[in-house]
Image 1 (cartoon, rainbow, N blue to C red):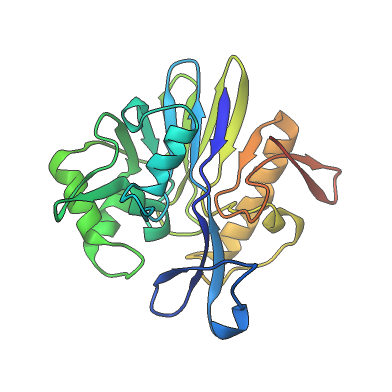
Image 2: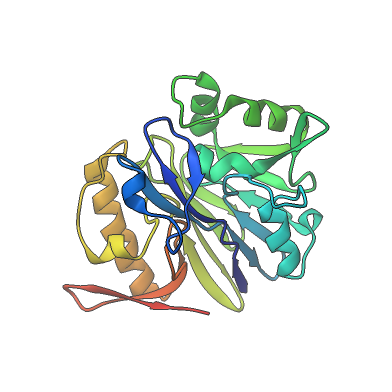
Length: 257
C-alpha cells in the first residue's frame, strides 16, 4: 500500500461559503474576520488491486488550466484515468469540487474511468438543494456520465475495503477502513479531519450531530491505535498521514512520510 497526500492548499471560508486561498506566511488572518481557516488534502492510495482517491478537494485549477488534483496525481507518477475507485466520505463542496472539471464551458467527470462510491442518502441530500454546502451542478454532471455506485448503511464494498455509515458531521457521512498485504489505513473524512481533534475533546458547531461526532473521533482513534491503522487526515495543516497511539488517557499522533 502506498499513500499520497494530494495537498490542495489552505483557504479561508466565511459566511458566504466561498473558499479563498490563504497563504499563512503572506496573508494576515485578521483581514478576514469571521472566517474559518481550513486545509485541503485529498488522498491517493495504491493497493494490490486498485488506485483509490479519497475525496476530491475543491476542484481548483493551476495557471495551466489543469486541476491541482490532476497535477498532483501526475506528480505521484499516475494518470487520472489510472484511478479505479473514488471513495467519497460526503459531498460537501470542499470534498466534492474536484469530481468534475470544466471543458469548453461544460462540466465533465474528472475521473471517467473510476467507480464512484457514495452513500445513497448523501447523494439524495446533495440533490435536494436545501444546503449551500452542496453544489448541485457537480452531481448533475456525474449523473449524466460517471460510473456511480450508491451504497446504504455499512458493509464491505470489496475484499479489503469496508465502509461505515457514521453520521456525525452530516447525516449520511461515511468512513472507510482499508487493508491489503502491505498495510492498513483509515479515512475518517470530516468526522476525524485533523490530528488535533483527537488530542482535545470538543463539540464542533459545524457538525450535524456534534455530540456523536465527538464520540466517534475518540472511538475511531482508539480503534486505529489498537489495530495499527494509518490515519488519513483530510483537513490536517502539516501532517495529513499519521499513526495514532493511545495510552488509556491521551492520544498522540506520529507523522508518516
